[in-house]
Image (cartoon, rainbow, N blue to C red):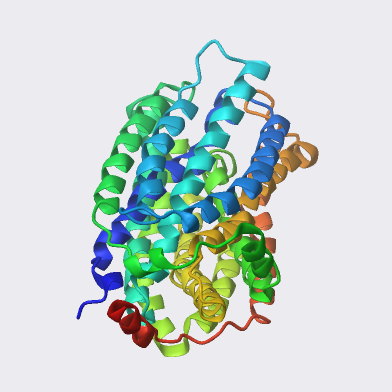
Length: 445
């Protein structure tokens, strides 16, 4: 008898990663260039907004996950939230990249704050539910690893578009480096694409109906149990070292190319494209590494590779040397993508086995609070460039922009990833446990 949780083809679920990645990576990769460098918003205002966002996100993430876990409909627990959040994310993202031309000063900051926070809110809504489906749809680690590898492949495809191709579209095809029109057109195209893809995914997944008959979790007892879980803190904080480093890179890569390498923004297409292609090829390599040494040891190794990449990137002084460092960066990034979610999934499995309740939404959203720290940290890191190097905005860049973005893109991520590599050595997650017997029992009921 086919288990309900395995009725969804892995590729159908994985396709959703393409849809969720397109909007948020456009935001992460281009928002600093648009608002700070082109529109002239002060980096200190950017830092304040991102810190405010981090506080709001720390509150709304667990709430959204909790509401998802408690949802009971004939369409499932997660699908209604995915159908609601998809158009709202697209609309807020398009508005974020369409600031009225007459806005400046505080008005521009308010527009940025409103739609940046709304975009992240709806992104949290989508990812809390999409991420919770992975352990539910694919209870066996082997099938889970296949689904995860496929969705990371779709994410890389999305990154080729939303990161590597975007600088060409926004500054060369639909606009130029001094205007905002190209960003608006690109945002509309990406928004439509994301909505179509996410609807195809959402309407094609089959949640496990037995989970919908479990007792609805209560917020305070569930939250306290999670907060008392030592692995929640150790895995969450260590994973945040990687997440924040990645967010800094996404936010700063175009300005690194522009100021540190002294090239046009469109050249970021070459560097980002190479890193993504290497990462895509690296996923197959890391899948074999995981099969040989396990997800936990592979996770620790990926941290080390990523740290080495940032060290090499620091010494790059041309596109050619940056491309050399980018090969190592792509390999390390592939390793983190292949292992991070598997380590987290083991923590979720252990929690469900211990407490008898599947509350992946709340648990993943609580983990998401660590990830959402990247907004505040990237904002503070950007603001520090004004203090250290005199870079306050595109209108007031100072005289040391090359050093500023070398430190921003290389030194800050290296320190974070090195801390993650050290911390990961002290983390031990429960071994993978097959759940076929428990699933068969659930079907029989």
